Structure formats: structure tokens, C-alpha cells
Amino acid sequence: MKRIFLYTLLSMGVVATTSLSHSMEHKVGAQIRFRYENWDNLITLGTNSTRNAFKDRAFFRLRVLLWDDIKFNNQTSLRVRLNTEPKYQMGPHYFMLKDPERRKFDQDEIVIDNLYLDIQRPGGLPLNLRIGRQDFLGPDTYGEGFLILDGTPGDGSRTFYFNAIKAQLLLHPRHTLDLVVVKQKERDVFLPSLHPAYDDGRGVGFIQHKKRLTASNEFALWAYGRSRITPQLTLEPYYLYKKEENSNTDRTIPGGISAQHLHNLGLRGVYSISKDFKLRAELVHQFGEYSKTNRDRRAWGGYAFLEKAFPNCFAKPVLELGYIYLSGDDPKSKKDEAFNPLFSRNPNWNELIIYTYLLETNSRGGNIPGYWTNLKMPLLRVKLTPLKDLNLTLSYQKLYADERTQGLPSFMFSNKGKERGDLFVAMANYKFTKSVDGLLQYEIFDPDDFYAKGAKTAHFLRAQIQLRY
Image 1 (cartoon, rainbow, N blue to C red):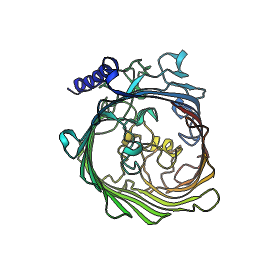
Image 2: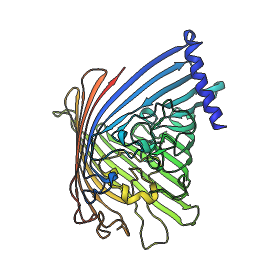
Image 3: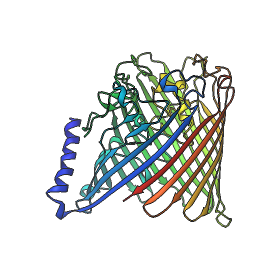
Image 4: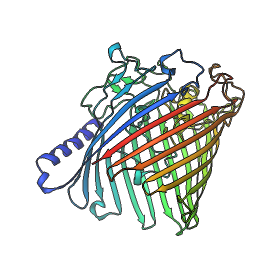
């Protein structure tokens, strides 16, 4: 039934763009993103490089997006977008493919990463509908993406989509409520790939010639409210339920996970203390259980940021002082208190750390980076605009573990300490023209006693150029 629905939606797009193109408005666009990345000591902090997956990486990646936004009338529109991102590995890491001649190059699929129908106020009701494959990014982001941002973390930043139905209730000019239902699969089974991917034969990075997108089959629903209480105060209460099923071969592949049910009650708030002084904070309580063992899950997560702008100073600095807390599992407890990042396995506050989490959390989240958990992190960040088209961001982050670990690989983890280490981040964004921008990003992490004595300093470098038409 799901396939029939989505294939019907695709057919509507094809019909719209061919036989009825003269009677509708089209907004065709394209984006090309070219990246170079260099990882030094990221996966195991230099403690083990015997396995291919643990080796340093240097690679190029080219993402191409092509889309058409079709406006039928003032109420109804359709978006169709294609996506592909081939990658070339320069070594010493390479792709684990069956064909040894192609282990440096992943030609990638051509996928449909957006296909949704928008209906504004159907029948005059105070309601907006979005049905189909969609992103929750930009103006559609929930808060700061703390729990809901990336529905497909297994393919990195190639895609972010959710297979979803979203109904936004327009309760009042200052109050809205989103009701959303989501269904995600380990690989894309709802829509065809126009060019099949390679297969590694292991179910880790690829499954039946399609990219692995999630660590398990997932179902979720949530209610997310947005209310402007006063001109200075905005509150966003929410409830989110997520079901994670057993991984596709029921834990027989490395990093397979167990099924669980998880409920989340949270609240985000933004308060403008003055014109240039703002407080942002979010707190969520998670509770549920693993399906087979009935072991309870109880966790907390949240953050708080004070943001002060100095618009009259040189480079217009914006200073942020923040603190992030994600509970860890107490090994002495019968419950599992580890925070689950749900749909936010992405570079929230930095890029480097999400890869050091791989060996720490693969029993919970599979072999996909970004399972943020067991973390206490004070953060200091400065944003500068020294030139009109140049933005600089400098950040210092001190990382701690909420709980000591137990039984993790001794070559990387001490299983004794709580101090993860110190992280420094520098980013420069420059807008060359209206359609061309560039990014240079560098991060360095100095590990502490949470890791083994042999842990080395890790480095992450990214250079990017992006064109949009």
C-alpha cells in the first residue's frame, strides 16, 4: 500500500511536468556541492588501524541535486527532487566492495530524495498538509534539530529525508501544532533508484545494491507545538514516539541493534532578554523499553545557550556560552539510562566527535556515526563577520562523559575515566557570488582519560565549494 501511494505521487509529478506544463508554474533548480575531506585518527583515535574501517581517510565527494517545484494553484503544489553523490577514496581507507577494482570509487545511486504534495488549507480548514518524502530542514526544522533533523544518517549528508505525512494545525496566529507520522527503512524500498549502488555483501554500508540509510526499520509519530507566548518568549512543547526494530538480519551483522519503544516528552524555549541578548534551552525526558528483554530505558537530554550580539563592534561578534547534557548508562543500574538521539545523528555541535562514537555505541545504534549520548559539554563559540560576505566561527568545547563505560574495546577506551577531552573548531564561510559559496572547516581533538593511554590527537579537515542555480 505504501509503495502504491508513493508511486502514484511520482506519477503525478511526471504527468504534471509533461502533459500539463503550460498550465502550471514551474521552479526548476539545481545544486552542485564538491567536497574534500581528510580524517586523521578519527575512528579509533589512532589506537588501531589494522582494519580497513579504522584507517585514516582522504576523499572527494560530489553531490548533485536537481528539482522542480510545481505550483498547480494557490493551494496545491508538488516538489520532485533527484539526488546523487559519487565518492572517490584516496586511501588508505577504501570501500568494502566485492569488486576489488572499484574499491576506491563509489558511483552512487540516483535517488528520489524529495517527492511530496503540499495542500494549503484544504476545504478552507485551518490546516496545511504535506504528504510524501520530505526534509525537516531550514524553515521546517524542529527547534535546533536536537531530536529531529536527519531521517537517513546512514548515507551521511547525501540525503536527510523522512517518508512522512505532516499535518500542521493553524490553531491561532501565534499557535500551531504539527502532527507527523514517519516510516523509515534500512534501505529505500518505497521508491526506485535510477542507478543501482554497489553491494559490499555484508549489509553494513549497502543492502541489496542500495545504501544503508538507518540502523533499523523505524516508525515514529509526534505532536510538536509552537507558541509565541509574548513578543519575547516562544515555547515549543512536544511528544515523540519512536519504534526501532531489530536490524535487518536480527543482530547477525556487526553493529546490529535490538528492538525498542521510546517515548519522549520535551520542551524548547527561546527568550529574548533584550534586542541583542537571547536565551535558548531544551529539555527532554525519554522512557520506554527494549522489546525482547523488557529492560527499561530512562534518559534525559538537553541544552542551554546564552547568546549575546555586539552589532556595533568590529566584525559584529556574536558570543555564545552553552552547555549540553546527554545522560549515559549507569552500569550499576538495572535500567538503561543512555540518551537516544532519535533522528539527530548529525554534526550538531561539531563534526569530528560523531565518528569517535562509532565503537562506543554500535551495540545501540549500529555502524552509523552520530549516536550522541553519555555527554556533558560546556561550549564557548564566537561568530564573526569581518567582511560582508565572510563569516567566521571559532569554538572551544570541553567534553566529559556522564558515566564511566564498561566492556568497551580496551585498545581505544580506558573504561575508567570521564574526561573525554578538548575540541577546537574553526569554520570560514565565504559567499563569492549569489550562486557560489565556499566553506573551510578544521577541527582538532585532544583526548583525555576517557580513552586509552595510547589515544592520539585527531584532526578533521573539510574544504567545500557549492553552486546553486
